[in-house]
Image (cartoon, rainbow, N blue to C red):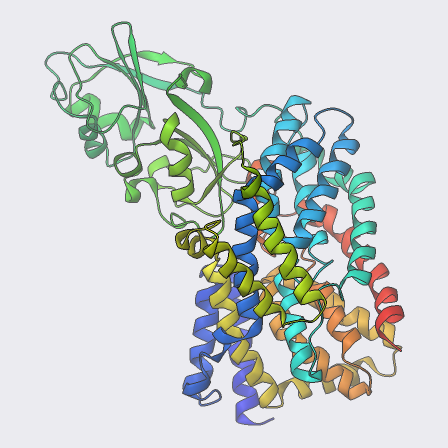
Length: 592
């Protein structure tokens, strides 16, 4: 083993350890890995950022933008409302919503498809008196299954297609993944509908009402502002300053008038009654220093904090939200955005930390109170997805048909090979901008930049693994250890290894790292690379055992109240089924 090979292995091992640890974001880890191989002299400086111009990176970015255009057009949301059932058995609801989610995710970003279906699915579950836990994990898994069907369904497929072009001169086309992907998706959906949802532990099935997650009826402090209080005449923000943003003023009762979600500049008057949310320790400065008087404690529900002008909504924190890793206190949420954070649920439970000190994570469910006419814009700025359905805008015919026509033309151009897929979809993005379907800001907001950084940084690292002969070493070791096993066994081992790695780190880096290994194994065995690349594509896009393998799994964890181990209960049989179906299909379609 040469120094360069050993160095690349050490860098990759460290990167995978950091991915699993999860303390640092995956894009930061990828950048560090890239810098390491550059400083070690393995990747020349002039090639360090070549990955950002790679066709896979360009295609992923373009698909994310087109997915956003389909979302804002309203057509997909309208279809979801029309086709998702509001009545029927649990199995009937899961079958309908999961099938629709799988179809959507075949042609748009997985997370985008989930974001469209999540509010509809929750609404139907609550109306039927079902727990969200029965329907949300099947929904997430369905979006992953749908992504297997087409080239643009999931980033690993795009990565694998471009690796195939690198080794054979021709990339996989739009529907080359369909024979295997459709078979796997069909069997997976049958499993989810008939057996899978029943494997979710019954103790997760408790919450059948959207208010039960937070239990904010557990008391809220009611206090009066006496004339001698130092807060009389002061603005609401004075309370926030005294309590270091650990206390929320949810309402002011002034005679017969009730002011919900008061602004930071609202003046407090003598004899105002305040509804304060905060733990006893946080409230001490108000009673000891500011001379507020406690009038009692009362139980209160979310309905009492709503009015014609003020809404209380649940929202889940989306991946790459600008507030991820920050706290309410650090954000000065009420002062800056004019909303109140009433509660946070993480994995279905309230964190045992002061509300103002909780650092937000992807998948957290936030209970927010704010003005009806601005709350939607604030949620978008915070990177939060409301779990209640938004009002359906009356979309003009042009608004609906134009993005669908542009998208259809791009798919046709790529499918028939008129232009490379990245050119087809970047052209579609340009058309969306020129027709004013999307603004430039929409375009930049639609791109998940951490994914782009991850891909752009890891591609040179993967190429370094190949250039140093590291992939050949790994392939030789695998073939030597496996011995004279049949080809189907080697494909199954490669697929399972990709699945396990994807469950622990992320599906995109799994595809980047495993694709060269798959090619190396094929070359060692003297076989075509296509079946081995397909095995990696299916395996890396199938992270069903953990909530961290894919963002869709992370997003449903909070609303569904799932624990880490719940995913494996439903995911292990599904992954076994996928291997059992995918390997014979790959042998039949791709191995002459």
